[in-house]
Image (cartoon, rainbow, N blue to C red):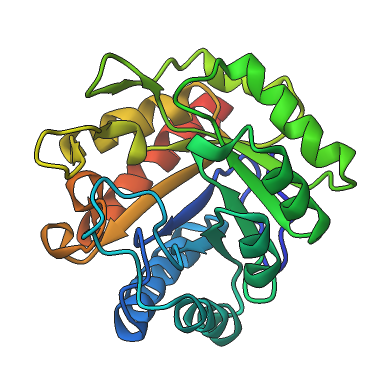
Length: 272
């Protein structure tokens, strides 16, 4: 199921779509370089593409962690990318006020996993008329996401998707239950697999989230195999130097090879 998002190109029949970009907007030049590379790859492979970048990071382990370059500055960069390349863009929001502000600059509003039950946030996002992507809380069952989706629908917006991003497994790990993808598809919305945040190792003693990026391909392959409609991948030219979530991001140079393999899996399943 390909979502109805402004300027989202539809690829081949049976294709999955992609949300991809840096964790956070660190500056205009880096954002444009990543967008250009992702667009070139997805155009070649005929994958519908949405550029992803957080305009700020409100949920950080430590108070001295990087949170952004300034809300309006980052949002204007996202708006410049969407207009320069004629592609949709997605960003996270954390409050009803964020929803109203960000809606002026982006096409998709994303609800962070920890906030997926916040009624005021879901309703405010829905009322902007933008497409809404709700990340499944690390503490929720797949079936429970039906209630988050219904809040958006009851607020008058049927343009909504949900994203699997792992379930808390002990104090410092996440695990993906792939049964959740078909279970959430039964809600009647597109289901996305977040192949990078699902590999986070939160709550590390040094106050910086860890990760297992070497497992991104494994997680992504499994997600496509069980029918995920879309993928969410955070990517960076040099994850070791990324200002947020570098420990679980995909190196940008690896993106094309990964997507090529995933297309082969999807084509095999669809009998192409």
